[in-house]
Length: 245
Length: 323
Image (cartoon, rainbow over all chains, first blue to last red):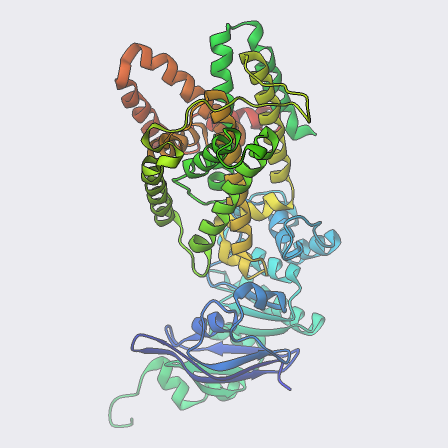
């Protein structure tokens, strides 16, 4: 039984099919990448999984439970964490308070935050221990990306959806992020689905890759098989022209 | 208790004020305390909850009218009790906020200027409604509203004199002020700060944004309703202006001038603006509104955090305390 099971998911925006019979299954503890050109429907798929958008057709099951019609907060309570493309941190809260928010009890206005030791460990992992009392608004773009990753770790989800986690990062930061993602996956057994444009980063993740185009899952396979696939190359670089085409 | 120290200092300053001013100013200070409480309600929902409510007078007016109708015996002669009337005023205002809030915030909800326009429109509609509701006094309003009666059972203690009214209001307002201050220091305050800047992020952590928005909207309405109820007992008069456009705009200006993101600044903003109105309207007549407009523009353009909040924030940094 798949941990996340997406069946024949459709979503239209006017005449545009952002999701066209998307079918995708993730095993528990797996790490999977989702690539594709801009506007191919990757972020729409994340929005459909997390309840930000309602599909026109199709079903999403998570941990053997139908979650298709649930609102975002109910889906999150079932253990799905999501990182946005543009880092979504709370700018008026300190770094530590940002990590505290996901640990507060859901459905109650007053609760004690969860284990502070865990939050200190996360601070160490995301290398923001020195800045724990600074407002999140004062962090650099890369630090905000890491803080949001830390917030999702504090949430303790069993499935994490990462939307371009290395956008705006340096090569060194990108390599560290790849290492962090592998550690979360292997060390803590968390299932991850990662959207990314940076092919070098996908290679570092060394995981199965799904290619999306025009709202469909076009290809699935290993990084090598996807990189060598002519249809995928055509998708990224265009159809070759001239006598040898 | 540390966050309450500046509040205690302010309360003591208010408490000793009657030693230095005459009964006219004591009576004015009572009104200022009520306006300050009303400003706190808007600061909570706007400055902390991120909900720009342009119709805060709706709740003030509901509280005022319910209090007036009950204490005048218009609902039932058996329900003439100040405590029960205060409770019903607060309950009616917050119930209206929950119903209104559900329509405003459920689903995708509306935000920012759209929310401001809708709430302002509702204030105008309710003002028209009260102007034409003759059973509730219509355009002329309800007169001869009895003062607060703090008595219990067969013992009556009606607040007719300015001094007992002032001290009753002082205690009520500062207890609520302290309650809001402590509330904002709790996990609820952290959730509100998060809600203000990134509601979607909060939802994806498993929090119901609708639930949090409704709670802060209803709490703010309850405080505004209480201030309206207290107002009519002091003023003895409830008219459609309590619920309408003009007062809604004025509250917004007090809070914007003071500083919406700091309770103390919003509270002082209301008091100082009302004080300026008293003083400047004697000198400039109706032109004082122009001066208020200029002050509002200066605040919005040059000091968006507020004319009072900006120096208070500097003082906070210097003293290392939160105001």
